[in-house]
View (cartoon, helix red, strand yellow):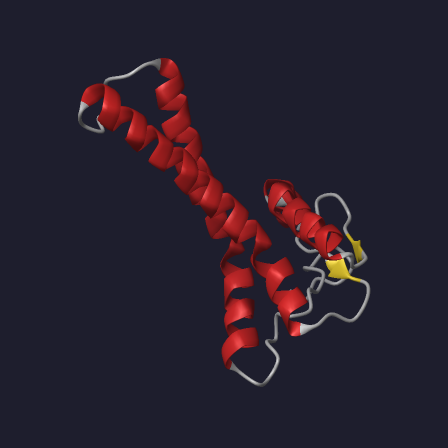
Length: 145
């Protein structure tokens, strides 16, 4: 039981940058939200329109993937102009860091899988997704097992 709680807490800390991007999205559109450090979700505190829900849901994915692709494309451009082929072995240390940072951000964008599924439901179905309102994950008080 304690092992599950520790793993959930570690997962919440791993997802913290993702959730902070959700908080930033809520601030950009001027809607109040509630987030507690280490949680898997950000709770909206008011009604939101469909476009606002789409924006706040997809914001972390777009930022992480877009930034990661920007760094990868920058690395490819530098590699093309200086080495005439994108070869990760040749090049300076900062070029390796640029590539690894881009790949890491592109990989981290996969944390938005649930947000992408919710956005799909918002766009293409009339019924609301079951995951459209975040719910606290099982903890010591509400564990069903």
